[in-house]
Image (cartoon, rainbow, N blue to C red; front, side):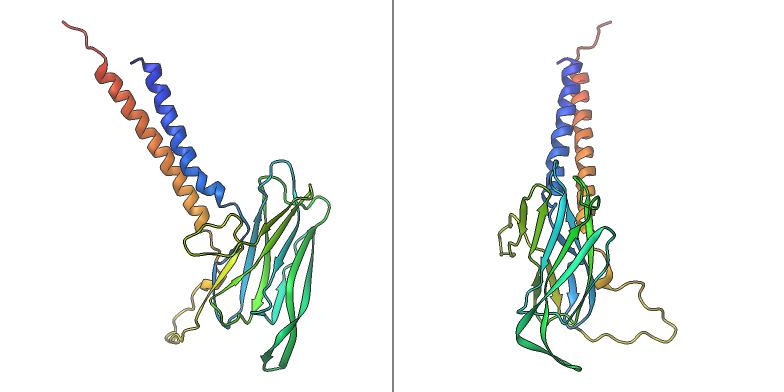
Length: 239
C-alpha cells in the first residue's frame, strides 16, 4: 500500500463522514416558529424564521395563516426595515369572549412583502416577530406558510405533523402546554432572567454544529487508522 493511497483513503473517509452528518442541517432549512412551545391562555412573542433555499432567486413575500378555529384576539407585528406588513381579519364562527366583550373577528393572515433591496438573498434568512395572545386552550397551533421567490415560485409550507411520518414541506407548529400554578418566589429572591416562552429555540443550530464536529473527528480518526496500517504493512530493513 502506497502512502498516497493511504492519504487519499483517509481524506475520502473524512469527506464522507462530514457530508453524511451535514445532511440533516441542510434538510432542516424550512420555515420555523421559535420558540416552539408556549402556555395556553398566555401571551408570547414568536419569531418566524424564513431561510432562502434557492441559489438563483430571492424571497420577496412571506404569508403566515392563523387558524380561525383557534383564534387569537390580540396580534401585534414588529416592523422590519424594508418590509411592509399587512394583517387581514376574518369573521369568526364563534366569537371570542373577553372581559371587554365579544370579539367577532380576528387576524387570519399576515403578509410581509419586501421592498427593493430588502429581499431575502440566497443563503440568507430573515426573522419576523409577532406578539400573540391570549393563546387558545388547544394542544398546538399550526401556522401554514407560503414563501414567494423573485422567480414567481411559491413554496407551500403547509404539511401538518403526522405521527411516524416526516413531512416534505412542514408547517410551523407552536405546541401549547397547560397553565400550571407555581409558587411565588421567596422574599428577596430574584425573578428568572427569561421565561420559557421568550427564549429562542436554537436547538436545531446547536445540533447541526455538533454533528459537523463529530464528522470531522470521525474523518480524522479514519486517517490516523489508515496511516498506522500503512506503517505496519511496510517491511522494516534488516540489520
